[in-house]
Image 1: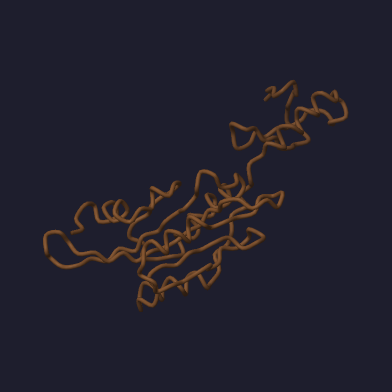
Image 2: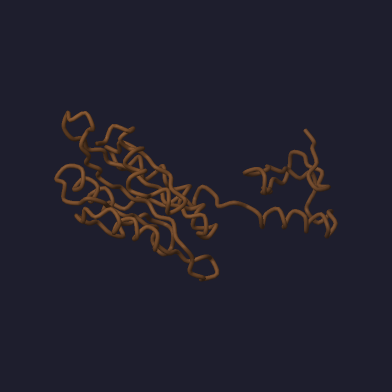
Length: 207
């Protein structure tokens, strides 16, 4: 089977992989050695490779301390919230802070002030994961409820690479934390105002 991509004829031998900005990847099988192509064609191939998104290997693993801290929050109520971050090498999700502090605004400010480093070493606003153990009274007067909420904090002005790695690793962390009752995606400080979050988490039932 033959097809074309940026002037490169492709067939069934000498496979290599091209990445495009709009697709995850395009698998190319070259019918002749790359030496037969012009410099312009090879340059086009290299430009496509430079636009490649992080591969699946960019997904970070979940450290055991994340699971231990979450179970302490869920079972023994040792913590009110936990904030998770990627390790400096982006290979592992670790606990940044686990706290019994019930002041939502303190928790919110920790997310807003979080930072990450770009590939060049520049410091920018940083994504984070967090879990918060919401406890609220019902407006009906029928008692209180608890709901452990997972927050994926990814501010719009964070670096592109940190945001992509956090996004690709989120599901792995969620699967490791058994007992999450609600998930919130937040990209702006207004998204994590207490009253609006509580209304969403409680589905409007909080008093």
